[in-house]
Image 1 (cartoon, rainbow, N blue to C red):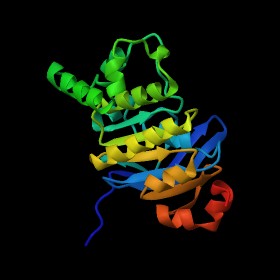
Image 2 (image 1 turned 60 degrees about the horizontal axis):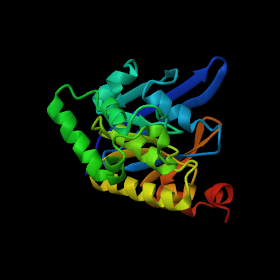
Image 3 (image 1 turned 180 degrees about the vertical axis):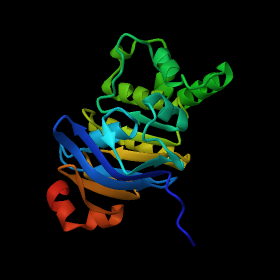
Image 4 (image 1 turned 135 degrees about the vertical axis):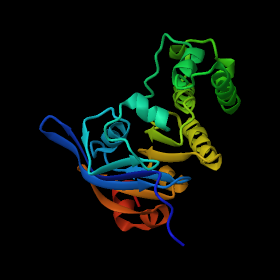
Length: 240
């Protein structure tokens, strides 16, 4: 049986900020239905990789294709319209806008009112707390509620691939558990996910495969089970 074509296929991705190379010619693939995680220390190039994939960071690549289409020269807006969207590190919520206004922003790709309303109804069913807070300003939400809003805003574009950048950052442990249960639920619903996460044990627990970035290069890649069993991963990230 032949392997399915990857949904996201990247080779030779380089991200530079002036003379500084944050990402140095990495290759990665994500197949439909997977959760793939990018691991590494702070400054390893994980967020730069996600930002580059959606056109928010300067990039060069031998290949950058999504769903079989070359997206290397597309703008972030067009990449979202193609079906790939990012939940950024730090959530990037607009504090003076309401929850409802954030959802409208996220659903801007829906030209017709019907699909927009239908997608918003799906998000409010998936995130009941946001339905309760629909007309509150986002700045009044707790950290966990803001993270849920950031995810819901991204999902309003009905993506095929969701990029998640540090979803547990700054959240209490019980809230982190809810966020990771949500990620697993999204995959069960058919969503493909590329995850950057500081909590390596949690990330590997829900992921299918992973890549470890060190100084902008991929040093280790493999199944989540193999990475969890790796002495190098345990020593560097798991503390045992």
